Length: 337
Image (tube, one colour):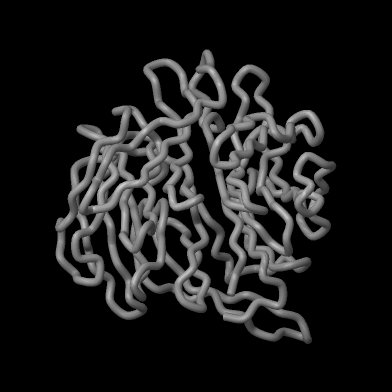
């Protein structure tokens, strides 16, 4: 797949946008509440629309680039994926849609065959299990009803069901949103789903299968709130300009903050996007053309895309010209091949 503009955007109730042109994708519009709906596999971009996964291809229509979709397979409840050793590993809640609890399952896709690589107990309601690749190992960060763990696959290149081991997370009420590797440490963005409130948190892990170590809570940007708002938590993170950046909602004000970490010091309110742009939550964060992009919510139901002024991330952020006001927020951003 060759994109004329590599920034690909998807919103919860709108079709794909590539560069400056809104393009219908054969009426394939994401439904439900998946955390991640765009996936990369080789030179392809895949779109998840519950309960189906599609591959996207570009065609030329009247001199412009249009996106068309072709169904690959059916999987309900996809939440995360990562390409590893030539395969796409997909984490999902089997037989579930939206926030309904279902079995935690991992599938692998080699472009031809879909194989079930992991089959566990039920995932906690509202949880979003992640796939990650770290230190040449494939990881699954789960949110089971019975236990929360970070698991690694013993033979990641082999289709061997349930050949996974792991260590426990520091809380039994954890929900994952995103992950990033920074200075050879795996960081996990999410929240602690306490009984009556949500609490934004960041975890770290620096072990290996040979020397697992422990998963540690390393940052808690905000105190707990008085409600359980789905927008609360550390929502996205990525590495940019030598720093680890993370987007989170400040519970006391409901504002979207950009935090920054240099390996030593956490600066949780590095940039206040809530005050400058009235942003309240974030669906994704990516780096593109040496600028930091966020797909965010401006108010309760309006999504837009904003970017930093280059590496001056404390400066004035601007709305991306090509991004219309999405109906229900921006769920995912992907820099395509």
